[in-house]
Length: 208
Image (tube, rainbow, N blue to C red; front, side, top):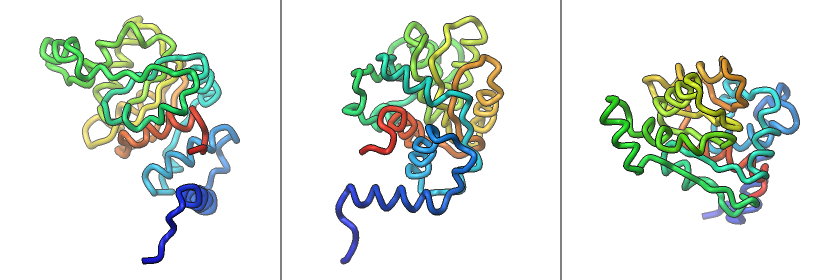
């Protein structure tokens, strides 16, 4: 079979195809690499119309990474998708899903373990990069924590997916009541690959 095999050439052709097919004109130059990464993660150029990035979100997220801020993920799949060799500050990549406190929170509050994982890492949230790629309940609970006085993260990368709560949780994030930098994909679509791709874009742009 005849097909492209060189990894660098595959990435180059993929990113060129995205630039050719997606209208990136409404995004600032420092936002476009992240948007391209998100499109590359799913193969759907039409998501470009549903991507929302807060003012200065990219710069503030990059600064947080450069300064060694931890990366808090809602599920292990997000954590596994982050290219750690690109984290020049050797940032911690954390997921509280399997911590004892997560299960206890879920049991005591009739809630999800994903929300419990965020709760279990409450002392790490201030100034952190929060990457949510699966559970709407994790994003909702994070916003509830902030609403109740928890310290703010540096940026929220909100990409929960699904038919129950995903669109609503991201709409709540995009309302930006707490003045926190964010990146999100509005609507039902999302997933761990998006959240990991957003972190990777902040860490290295389109470099592989």
